[in-house]
Length: 309
Image: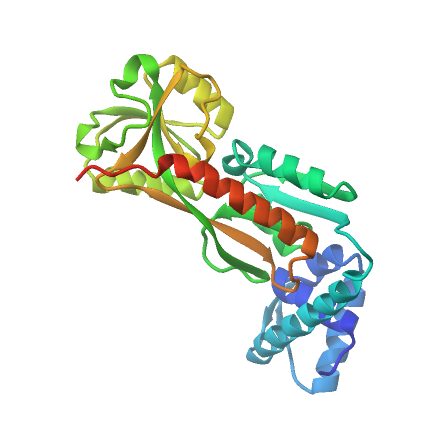
């Protein structure tokens, strides 16, 4: 393949960012330097890899094809580097992972405790955020991986299913009128005061669609992008919320909430692993991911209950 590794990295950054300026910022280069590298590639190939229009660049069909091949080269280079590093001995190094409050609530702490015990020479940093920000960080390769709700494909990001968890109805003990953990049928739900995340949250649409398609009346909607604030409000009032079961395996305020899986029909949430398309997971990242998956399965087991017919 024509082009140095630096040429390829800068081309991939420009392709994914759709901007020479953003690519330069991502790769700690200059805008003119990125332009020169791309121009050198195009002169070597004798064709255009991008079309330029008012400061925005768009890949040509040749650029699309070259991008896919470049990802193979970067992954192969990454794999070769990690293969050599594996002989250094032990799992050590730095790891940066992005998780949403959905994952940090019940899954993170036990997985992190096991990981730090098994790999005392590893440095790990966990960044908490919502899916849009975490996805951008993964695309820029600022995170080794992140766990987010399932979304459409994004350039520079590869994904696969991490786990599926039920959505649960959370209400206060005083106002729920049902036993904790008991599946709740949609026909049992009357007009609700419902706390929902903002429209920037990918779960918002699925929650609203679920209630609308099942004819559940909503008395009032309250938009709140604050997980702890939502739980506190629900525990002290008649407001209810729909939250991922994986984060509600333990009540933050025992005796304050009643938590019921939605049933007849159920509502589930797919969480996916996303990682930079031009990299492979390091042994360190794979080890921590494995622990997260084990803890997620353990937490989700709480909701493995028979559904009413």
